[in-house]
Amino acid sequence: MLILNQTIITMKKVFKPILSIMLGSAVVVSLNSCKKDDVKEAAKPSLGVAKVSGTVFVDTDLNATGTQFLSGIKVIARANSSELVNNPSGTYSYPIIVKETTTDASGKYSFELQVGDKGITYTIETQDKEYIEIQVGGTATQREVYSGTFQTVTLHKGSEQVLDF
Image (tube, rainbow, N blue to C red):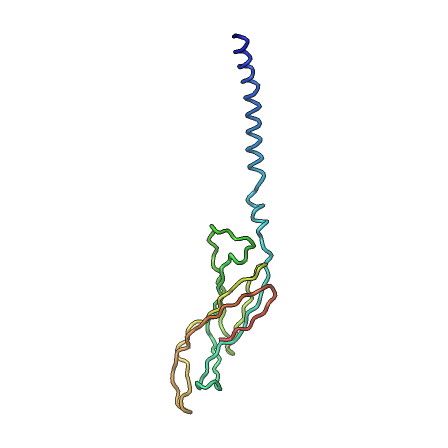
């Protein structure tokens, strides 16, 4: 019986360090095998740009022959940044991309917008502008409100899109 107890004690002394080494190695391997940066690097898209431009105007004589180009109108582009990622996470809340510009004296605006590998959908909108003069009956004028509107466009790398409002 004494020999059996010594054998068990000897086995415990031998296997305990071996088991500790094996478990320790497994933990080190599992901690070093997948780094957070490796995951980000694999999902990084190659970004490009696309151009959106156009003119903001109103029909000043209400018959489509007179046009007033609107200067100083804010034009806003919005998109969900998850569309820039190749494999977006369903649990991460991606920020909204917001870019703004203002129309020049000729009513023209232009954006250069980020685009991912798969393309991206932007909503382009204009703000309201009050007190636009509209001709009514030849010489009489009427002050109107230009109500902003929006358009949705899907862009791809290198594309150019004209959106008039």
